[in-house]
Length: 188
Image 1 (spheres, rainbow, N blue to C red):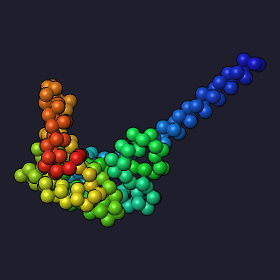
Image 2: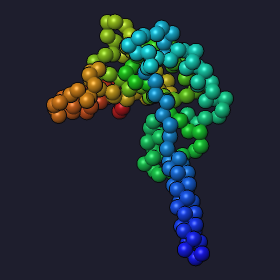
Image 3: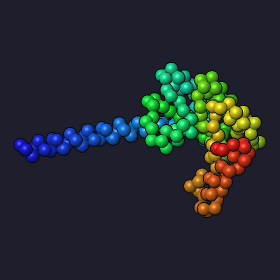
Image 4: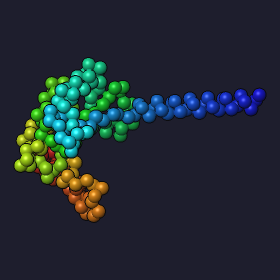
């Protein structure tokens, strides 16, 4: 009987501890909504990475109407470094690669709702002749709004897992950030 009580007591402690740590972990985490392309046209090569402008606007309106706390990645970093409790319903929004459709379709919605976001730029892709990437003027305009932060993705579009040279990895990660900061004349 005593053995059974001890087992029940220990089991309850384990369950309470698991619930507490699960809850506490949630207090210090922030979901990041990451987008690649917001475009009305579908692309078979990027199908899973494209969201329509209507769907994007609907998602952003949902965040607004349900009182989500949309913060910048910089604010997420501050919260995490300071080990501060994250307000409930806090999310961050990011865009990967620097597609022009971010400027055309997403930026007006973000501006209207006053939602901050971060765009990670592939340096060598900016303003490319195909016209599907952001120009330096568009990047600077969005950055000047105070809502859009610019981050460094890499120099080129090559997946980092395919790069075998440490020097090339350094160039892709560190040097691309420095080049972007020099071009924009601001930290990224």
